[in-house]
Length: 311
Image (cartoon, rainbow, N blue to C red; front, side):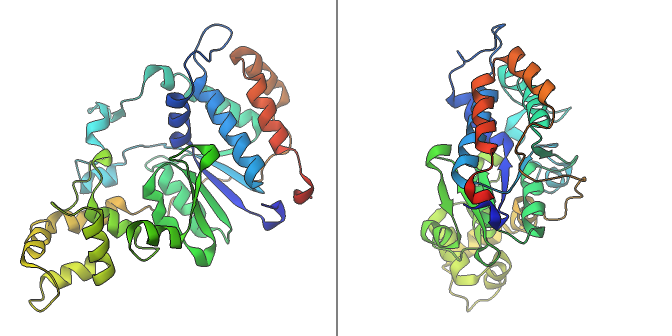
């Protein structure tokens, strides 16, 4: 993609470094034997994505709060099963990965890649705010379907979905969402609320899976429209579905705000220009030597070099 488009690429950074950690062998280590598979894997992903898509701008979005209080207040089950320490709201993360996260941040800083995390918000919310205020085009790189709700053809916001791997990512626009789930392209948040997601502690409506959720959202337009139909004896709803949705009214009153990605995060000042050279060459050399990152960093720097299309 030519850089002259001023394309913005937003990285769901945790999604990518988790994929790297579990996908790259832990035999990838620093000279002192410390695992750096997540660091090197993430850098290789960034190099591949940059070389393939040539974004003019790049931001690594971070989870400053993986389980924000405003979501937990609405739905206490939100991500509760992933707590390692409930009292301190700490996520269960493998120790070998947790040790690599500070290294990732140091490397991003030395490279000059903008990275943003905002206290009280998830990376999804940072991504939603950046995508929502940008004129486009915007590519959001993630393995998380929750972000399908940001797809917007009119504003040229799409998802590069990495479920099958970064190198084999799927480009998701409104037509893909509609084809996958049988819903209007921008209705994913309501669809996901109905269906639920055990991985996020979202129970959904009992007995409502993908197909039924898609049918209901297509027929009634939104959760608000569906709840109005429950109260309308003449609405096209079977008695069983009417009862199930009525029984879930309390959940449906709060879950949409939990599922919906925020677009109003207060962002710090940042420069999203894709770097063409390291911001701090000396620090990068030191990090490369200490952690054994030369080959991965060279791939990133080669990918960041201006191509003819970027000129």
